[in-house]
Image (cartoon, rainbow, N blue to C red; front, top):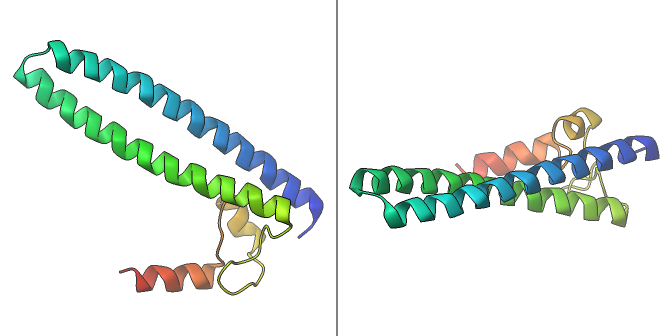
Length: 118
């Protein structure tokens, strides 16, 4: 994997990380607003707010997982292991990394892992 491509992916990863952190910050502000509403609302508002809170928590969990994957990819860049499948050790195709810069498995290993998890 050439250094120019790795630097491009590093920039992309840092940009995605920044977007997620901003999103999590906004969700935290929204959550604080929901808590205040629940404390002063009627039953219909409380039910609606509970649903909103559940959705925000799910979104936050997905963002947190993606953030962890991005941080792991940045660590692999530092270690000189970026772009190598953690399962089989082969090189991950550039097209896959361009689509999912934090990918840690080649298509074959990712497909196999998905089949096992069904």
